[in-house]
Length: 208
Length: 208
Image (tube, rainbow over all chains, first blue to last red; front, side, top):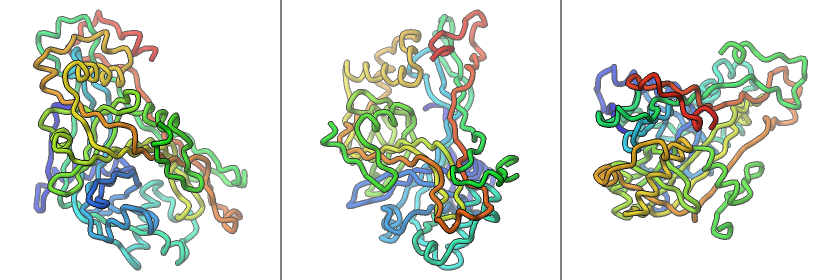
């Protein structure tokens, strides 16, 4: 992936950079978390939410990345959106348009009211408006789940945009060149088999 | 191969065999690679292709994961497809339907004819049929790029399918429950600004 712009956010960096990092994070909900297990890296996919200047990850108390956070493992978290395949006239310049953020740091385990609030935030991150519509979590349910917070301090963002950047000598080629857009969309909601058919799809899903 | 494949099994998340691991890998082209840098995990997004019983990753010679492969770092590679958001009647059972593969191992650097063939495979993985249509790589171009191969030996796969699995006591709720499908699609090809308008979109893009 060439022709990248790279933004690195360290404490006190410019707001514009931060806005770009936030907008990449705000466009997604799936991340890949890398942590150490016996000195080796382990990567796993998990869901996240952004909560101001940090991201929140949740998992069962026994999941590997939660235990790693408890043990003080360093973390590296990646979030990537692919926007297009870049079809250039040579293999070298063939690429992908994408936006990605990588966060480094140590996770902290949230507890008490902060944890309960974080669990709500994660539900509403996936489906804005959902928390107000579902049953409140019980105390045992909250205890089953752990929430790991990672501060957005050591963060880098990269993006590639635009068409292929071919070598001048390749422009006379009769090979087609351009972009194949990649789109991720939400489809029409599908009711659960055990849903009372009289219950309509809520507005927050019909008009998100 | 299946006797060497580790499948992590969870109540409704077991993926049965190697074919299923291959089919998850074959449905994508973006992975997140975790490697060690100064004893800490680093995760980065990159493109991959499956080549039989291994995956191929490519990057510039100076990219972090290529250097890590040269230095013998252990790798962990994740590939994930999200198929739906699972909207349950409680936060605890709210989830996502997904298919994911995680590969552990050490990367080996490909050279010579094997590397040249791998670069072609990667181009055709993104756009089947593309290699036959583009300029052949020059020797300096091949030298600029590194290809890292990772054997599909220590691999785990997880998947969640189906609707929400709510607690029996929540089924009387008047809350809507179900799935919000997530779809990733390829859009209509967009010609490069410098493309001769007389060059049509090739068949392998129109009818992939």
